[in-house]
Length: 164
Image (tube, rainbow, N blue to C red; front, side):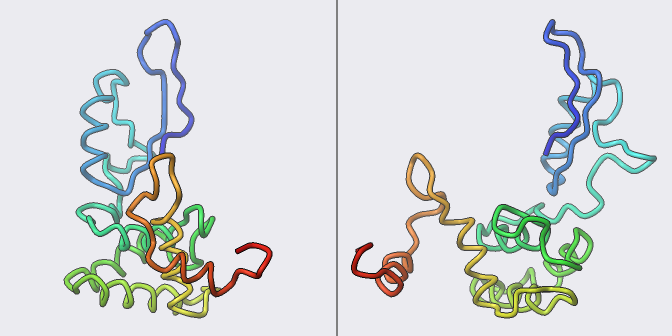
């Protein structure tokens, strides 16, 4: 995420900007490109280092896990994220279960997210549904990660005669 960017349209150097990312690889790439133009790290903030304190998305390739982590910290489906699940708690959560295989990992993450101290989502299935809503977002070229298998069944179950 890029915030507070101040650029001059006449190809002068970047005056200032604040960058936020949850991936160390992205942070390093941005650092290499922007530091020479800005004359300082774009991640410097009150003496903190150049990479995120909790790069929760670093090395996470499973789209469902990325969606579940997004639910924790905030996304379109859960603006503001789950209370009590900031970057530190989310980082600890993923490191706790990272070695588990796909569906088991998804269910463990969903259960821990719903069991967060101040969470208002009471069912693991609801957490998984929110994460799937991110994965199955419709785009110009179809769905982001393939068409959802459950969508047709869901539509049939909940549609009335007027909408079928």
